[in-house]
Length: 136
Ligand SMILES: [Zn+2]
Image (cartoon, rainbow, N blue to C red):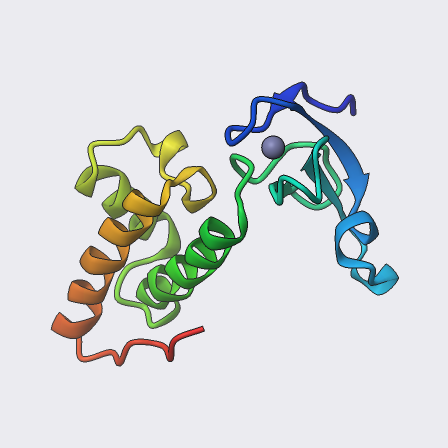
């Protein structure tokens, strides 16, 4: 599969596909990442879906990467606790934010959108008496 042409949303530079060890210095990690060509000055990258060259979302800086992980931890509790099935949880997310289902992916979310989803998902968990996962 051919690498996609992607630009860094922070600095406008092209991003290139690298082995994850390029960023993590941990050969055991495996996988690939799209990394801003100005890395590490511009600390911006995104992983690919395993076995493909398709990015999991838009390139993210450290702050956004952390927030997306936190958002996923909270959102995933909805289907992991069986409040909704996984497909229904994504449909709920899409409906809540007037997104097309194909756009209802945390990997595409900004920090603002992550914050909104955390609020809404936390409300669903609270109403179903599921405790929030601990902060990461
Ligand atoms: Zn950049």
